[in-house]
Image (cartoon, rainbow, N blue to C red; front, side, top):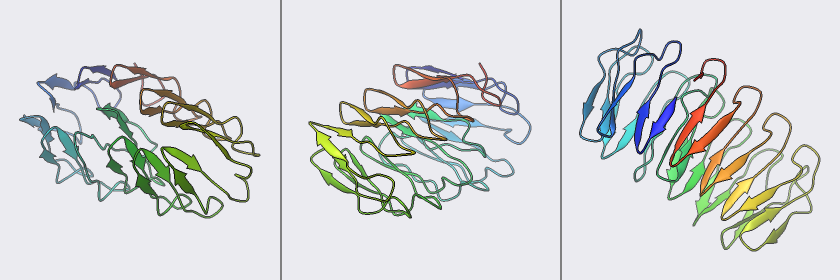
Length: 221
């Protein structure tokens, strides 16, 4: 996958032959056929990813395991089991996978709702979460402050989060972005106000302008 300005150009198994027209997507592939670009959006109809609707330059999709996608502003919310097809539009990264459904974007903030990361709320450019083992998060300015069993002793420095805890060590902040390193979600890096993740099934992601370039199994080249 490669990003060109606000356009997407992709080629990967099961997601081949995608081309960018204006700010939209035109594609033809098994299970993702008959894509057409309308204005700046993507309109498609395929099994498992039906009822695509375009709002401005936003892609809204509904598919099995990633239902109830919503877009705010010029944010792309994307889709597929395993967390593939991540794309950045503007300064927001929205990703998806079986246990990371119902993603919503507010401003330049990523909000997720999943089995162990429920009830996320955004305040300004801050991510606030309430979940089992990640409770009692509070925001101060554009800083995330958390107090939880394995996220103790958090301190705020300017617009960043500094923490030390097992399983989520070595937190670093760049601008108003939270960068974390923890088991299963290692080597997070921030570019601008975009969150980029590198983990066992989300490897080698890099940011180019407002887009993502990744290489991993099922998301190669």
